[in-house]
Image 1: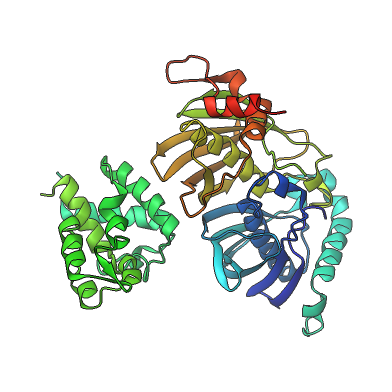
Image 2 (image 1 turned 30 degrees about the vertical axis):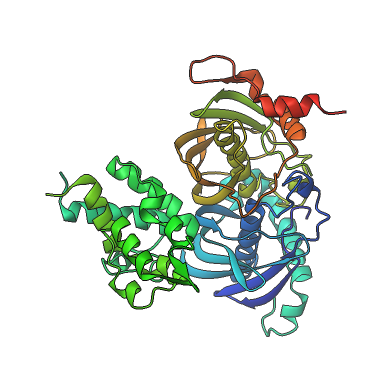
Length: 165
Length: 129
Length: 174
């Protein structure tokens, strides 16, 4: 996944919270434009990292039944620090409320132990037969791809967890 | 002219929208930074919303007297001098600085601003009935 | 991956409002495997396109002397997914610009229908960060490519002029 914003998941409590991390290597293409004389991780990619961690948490919770868990709403996404090349962004997301297909979470990103970004997110689990009925036959294949991606991200967490995915 | 209650309601709405806090968290005594979790960028957001809600202009230095807090004439060893505290009182008549005065550490200044201080500031700009 | 999340400005009224177009294509890097059964444009990149539209609108007010960065996404509501083949129309309106920041109300539309609503807070980088973030000549090339000066008008409806300091940098290019 070219737009995968996470390197690995380091903590996962199903139904509760997740911790993941991303290192900004400095070799990312987009740094040449953001910004040419001041390369830093774009704020929206810090948001994307928090969203992706939250989405994995939601998918584990429904056993990967739906391949799409989209970002429906983000609120109070505030940036207090930059992520410089060579530094690691640690993201944490915690479920606050579940309401049918909607999951509300609080998420934060840390660099060197200090908060760099925080936000509230609402994720929506999408039912393919509602979104695009003629793609429903692709869901089993898509499910497997998402499961495989998750497994690749979570090797160290799964070795500690009794839960089977 | 609005009443004090009107001002409080509008200030509360602005804080709920900008900070994502719950209605019951916004009490008059709540500190913006400590209790409501306001960070420096939130103040920009809060100021925009208050200006819009009340039709006023809020020059940054009226709420955040950075020029006093970074002035070597008013600050010594990380604390505001008595002259500095007098200057702050003069500049911010709406704020209750008694607590700050007891231990005027520069770093703590921002943390002491309460919802009530903000309401009184607004009242001083719009007038209340 | 270039970090350009709008394709072109359709409208640019200095200090007030800007409209930009973003075409979504299956061949873009972020589409690859992101959502296998139903590729869609990540919300974060829609927010970025909107932030670029609004940020350039805010920055132009100071002739691009202020270094404008995204400080807070107050709210982003995504009403539905945007997919390859869709054209997103981003509209940014300045609610307020001050010395140290700006607030913009923005939307995204597909085929005339509201797709997203986004409120953004920008901050101007202060003296704690003394260096420029863009090379002025390269920055001017970028905004020219976006068509900012093709459609840009000032408060009187007159064609927007390129700020002298950017023109000078462009002309000084070897």
